[in-house]
Length: 329
Image (cartoon, rainbow, N blue to C red; front, side, top):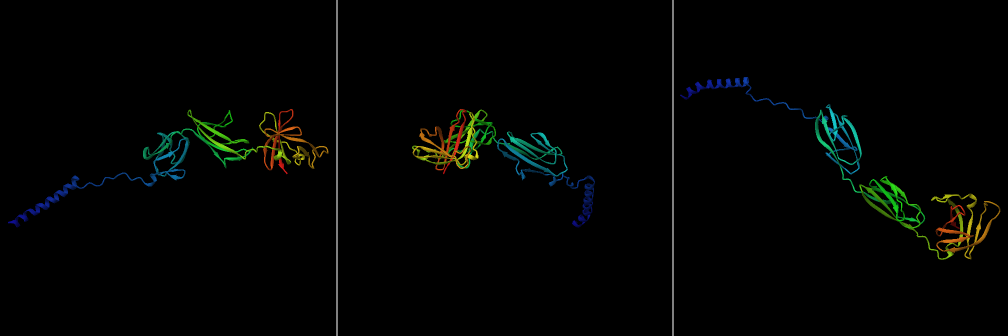
């Protein structure tokens, strides 16, 4: 009986399967094919960014207040390219560079291909507006010889600065944030100040410049008792601050001889400026406050060492000043 049933149902099952397969083919009941997707962007769609030749690997760049920033870009694809800075068109060139100086505000760069925003923004963050500050740089040392000058390099942050020393009543105003200030010849140690100004604030820097050695204290005439060869003669006009050399060749072998007995001799040397006078003699004496009288002329001692004597004396009538530099023989 079972065998008879199998022989009866088997053709019907096969026929049903064939009919179902035919219907699936006609009605689309078969498995759907994969839907195509947009192609993955190739390397040619990438945007290459560099900062001073170095690849920018982050979306945020930090720079100090009033600092500089520069970057370059390169796009090798075929799409329409555009860079916008702070939402405004900056460039549509596929390669180029931008340079920005003295930045005092943040910047945001966005990139577009076929007017569609791509990649991350390039954000430039500018640091906080600093309070003013100022300082001196001493080079090479903070000690200088007596009656010499020094150049002080200064730096400050601010709109302007004043430079002055402890004796100045009228400071020098500077606007360059880096520069050099000359102290002028110093006869004593001094403190120099620089004050920077910015946004109603100020900051002061200072440096103490030491003069060495201190001028000797003359208690007797022994330090001056010697023969002194004239090596330079300088002159400063009335109301002027600058000396200029006025020595002539015939004076360069003149010798001032100060003797312990109060007698002085002035020898004109082998090359005479006028006449045949070879020397003359007179007296000399010490005076208070680093002065000495020589042949009726009041000399002020500017510098005195084992090798050098520098004196000044007024020019009669004109109000000018002579400075004479001697070298000990």
